[in-house]
Length: 162
Image (cartoon, rainbow, N blue to C red):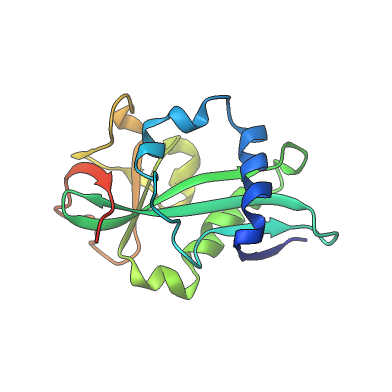
């Protein structure tokens, strides 16, 4: 059993260490990280999962981006500690975070990932949504948080600016 809570500033270094453990060296060189530079994660949506002993088991973050001129959420990274993988915690983090009240302020969410895995959470390939290179277009996926939210939304994904 895990306690899922919004990520706080006190969790930051521990979450970064988990991401370093779970992802290849140089993860911050990926194009999706350029969209996150100097942009704070979305408060209330980024979450951590801790076991009964308070040990970090998983984490998920969300970032604001624009697709063309349309505000959207960018999910990622989501990571589960290697000793906790296969328990469904990644899916629990995805669903729980998209069902908190803060998610109600958003209409759509996107990510770069494996379609067969994310399809079970309602994500499908986004045609006409272009992540910065060298992103494989087949891995650009989206989920409407409101019916029809992705209808007609196309363009380059860029950093969020108010």
